[in-house]
Length: 362
Image 1 (cartoon, rainbow, N blue to C red):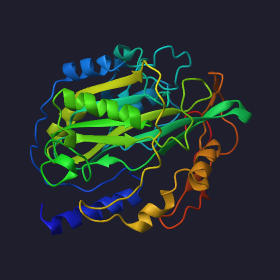
Image 2 (tube, one colour):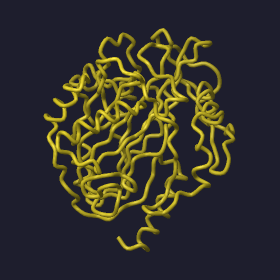
Image 3 (tube, one colour):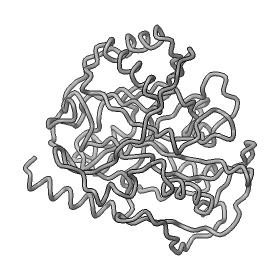
């Protein structure tokens, strides 16, 4: 893509981001991309040989409208019908007794046992192996903190806050863009590891290499261990991994992509006791390949262990109408609803007026 065209797409992306579309990025060079040499079966065996318990999930479109109509979720969460979401749907961890909050099995019985949000042990990991979407304006993969428990209230509330920069078509490592360099990103093979533990990430990368996957097509989507409360109990938080693609060049190809799972999602639980190696805070940034990130965009979130992020999460108790009991029971809404906004130049959280009510269907 010519540099002038890239700037045009960047302008469109920034405009849409300011309009409230999350994880927006700029388009890359278009092409058919590259196939990933590797074998999922060999990869799974290598993981198990290394002492990891492997459970299969699935990447699939998140039907928020269907879940709302069925009464599973109290809102559509600002859903953009023109750019549907996919999520990684996972089984619970071995010996996990406290279920997470959200499942779509009532409208998709084939997903029985899978969850849209999940509790994670600090040493667990999730890995996606598949292909990037067909040519589109942007796509991204991002981790969310879905719910946080507030013990003093004996309930959990939705936070739905991103946990860092997305892995996007601007930055992703694929077989067509090895090491995140220039090339054909679309429909290229990729592997994305999500974890808070550097030791687990290293084990997954070693198993990928043993299965024939090039190391320069692998990304890590870090969960920052410091500001989150990981674990499998009811007091622990739940997470979600969301994949977004929008404005496909070929609408038919885009519909086919969103309608069919194209990849493998695995939940990985260490079966052995090892010293944890929690990741430090990731450095956040946004910019074109080879261009330093804008400090004005990076600054508000560069300290993930600081008060601004924790303040945002703590204020989640004021930002959501639906609450969930820390004992596992669903509890009614309470208090007035507020929305909170940040600017790109300061970490100050400011309440903004909301026209919505706190009724379950809002």
